[in-house]
Image 1 (cartoon, helix red, strand yellow):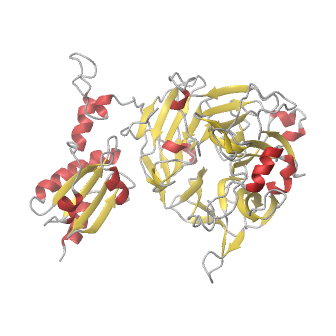
Image 2 (tube, one colour):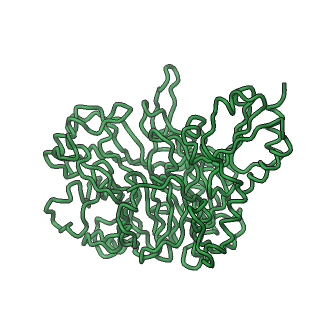
Length: 573
């Protein structure tokens, strides 16, 4: 199976009468980005990292100011911030641990990773009657801590600590999974492997569990029916590297509910119908007031995970469980029976591989019964009905350097109602039909005469807005570095919304600066080496060269005035 090298980005599909409309936030290469249903960018908190980003009522957003150098602290965020609509910090937590990454400069950091929850909301996403606090209350945070525990491994460990902090930043409760190793269900083969290699990472420690979600259960029918395991304050979490899903009793600290790490074991309840859950993310209980309330929802990544005996797919037994497709499952936590499942085949596609993100990703239940899914590894956000039909889809157009390459990956996205953002007027959003192939590029041959494609004006409009695609590959040394006049590189992409506005400006500048400026148009899909070497992270991107050296740079939506101001600076001297 392969992936196309050219595909649309932004919103590609929107059935307004069937989707649950609102604003969607996700962490992008630009910062915390808020979009409407048609993909319009309605707010950007530039530079605000998100692991994840979450929106609170009133237009507040949670995120962090940055992360630690991986060799010092793998996936450690420096802090957890709450900022207002204008980017002002109104709450900050960073006093979890003092570190000294550089000699003589100790500092406090949060070491937050993967998840957090604010009082008032069990999951951090919208549910009727569940309102996260913005001006007080406690915050549950998943953080890292360094541990030496020779009962688990003779290697230093990176453990996942649960902490609760009050509004003033005091830690008022904590829990450490390494203190409960014997409750996790590892067999002897897994224990032996963990002792020898607990999944060592760049910081020189074993990321033995890699817990990636943490939330409270909240009010639920199981506890109301007398099952104390599901007390609303108890904590539900999952460990990606170990294939463990569990609930911790907040009062006693005991693990009171668990499935995994070995789904093949004969346990008190039959797991055959549930199947293996591998490398999962975002396990949580669907909040009270939403369809499916009380059931568990999880993005079952597949990919790789677990500890076991050596096999054909795992020479030493690390990540011995594998599956090359993903699924989202909703299941009853008491019977372990699947209540709803999304796979590519259930969506009508030919092969389950067509829905596959082996890392990150999430799922959110919406008030109309639909589910918002983040297929994280390829930056795809989409909303599906209970019958697995897609009614909204958005592909992240912004790329950055991660995991050794260029990627548009999205860790997790959330949908919130329009009235949570009082700074914006409620939009009147019209439906958006998926693009035809004419709107994505030139077809190999003309469509049959009289066909609907032959008369479809959308493709012709879009292509004319972008201008003629360049042919061949630019000779960078000859065309740019050795040019006798300044050179403006224009990086664009198909389905780039801002490019449709910038391209006509580029045409005007080419005529107005004839003989004084060379313009080179570059399709980011055809010039991947140049995109990587020049670190082009978004479209459009404009880079000015003068005398063989960079003299200016602009990206995203820019005006003619802004571009000419850059040209003026570049032409001085």
